[in-house]
Amino acid sequence: MSIVVWALGSYPAPVLPDGGAGLTEAEVRGESLRQSALGRAGRWVEPVVRPLGWDWRIGCAAIASFPAREVVLGTLAVIYNLGDVDPGDDEGGSALVRRLRAATWDGTDRPVFTLPVALSIMVFFALCAQCASTLVVIGRETGSWLWPVAVFVTMTALAWFAACAIYRLGTALGW
Image (cartoon, rainbow, N blue to C red; front, top):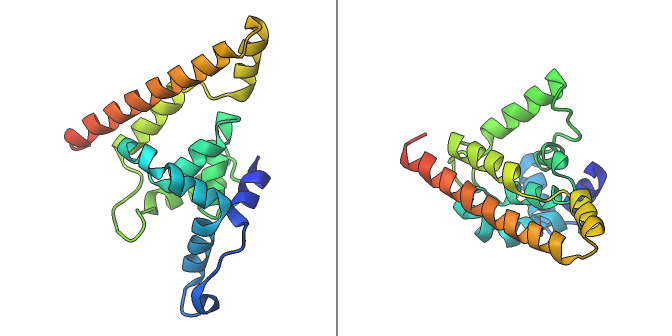
């Protein structure tokens, strides 16, 4: 899955003004990701995830995690240019933590990851029934694709509303 996320985050090749002259390497990588298929998907979904306190990069990770939610950390590692990170590995996990703590919203110094954002992510992933294999089993066991679709839509909506409520409450309380 990390290879697929990397490919979606790398292609199509970016169109940079003046070939990227005058941009730092980090700015070139950031612009490349924004113009990639994954970045475009993240930008497209950003209005939906912004009420949860998420930016387009967290939206990208959520999209990539729908086939298997356990890839969300690996996806964030790829998006933040860390490659494949094992969260159990002290070195890789620490690098990801440092990068996420330093992440800011595009064009600002407002941090992306705050306590209300972290809580909204956890609530969303705790409630969202997005594991593709689980949905396939539900379909097979019930003999109908109506049930997995209903479970997916209902649980995704519940997860979104709960994550939004947690984010709003945490922000209002100044967390």
